[in-house]
Image (cartoon, rainbow, N blue to C red; front, side, top):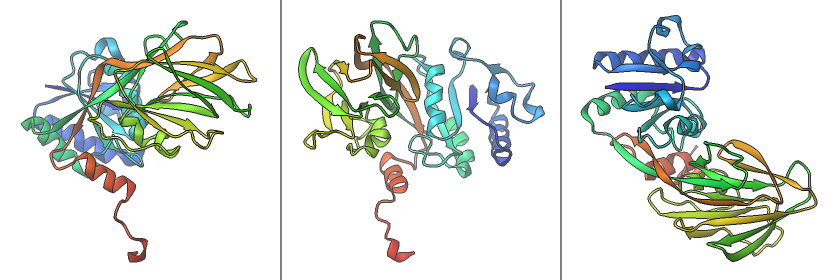
Length: 289
């Protein structure tokens, strides 16, 4: 078995956890392969390990472990794409909705890999299609697609169509189309609902709408959304997860469910409900502190 190790930035306080992970993998005769740019940052003794650079040479991996936060998990999608490789996230960051395996659970993670006792959640991806192909090959995302005004420009008007039929015009700073995974990210901060990962839906959430009756809307994910954007400026921002591009008012743009999904690994004792309770601090009473 071959396991990839991906990270954005190596920090000295991560060293003991990285050593623990590599030692556990080697103890069970699992080959470790590092992301090349991460390998350049870590201690010299790991420089002799095999490395991968991107999508084209990641196919030999059976599994990928991401060391970081949710942003690190999102990074792995550009390498995994449609290769159906499951990803486990060890939380070195802050919130950790996706990277929900604690640093202290490294031994349990490797043991679950050896015993094949971990669970895998299929996460929906969305795909963005534009007439000018502004996102290139990376036109898919796990969290959300957004359209947003630029800088301090006045609000914009976003006309939304559902399978070609007019849905609504949003006068707002922007609009979010979130997957169930993304429902706990930007959409949640703008008043959107929390969706279970297994539901086959998208949520449309306006950002600072001028119309007070403009509320988040949940739609089946087998629909195709298309947009027309207008405003005082001729250019706007659009993004897939954290990748930004410039959108002009004459561009044609649509969002649909991607043809492939993302596999997220969870430990047997963990669950989405447990993650919600821990990360959102449900049931906690400040009077008890």
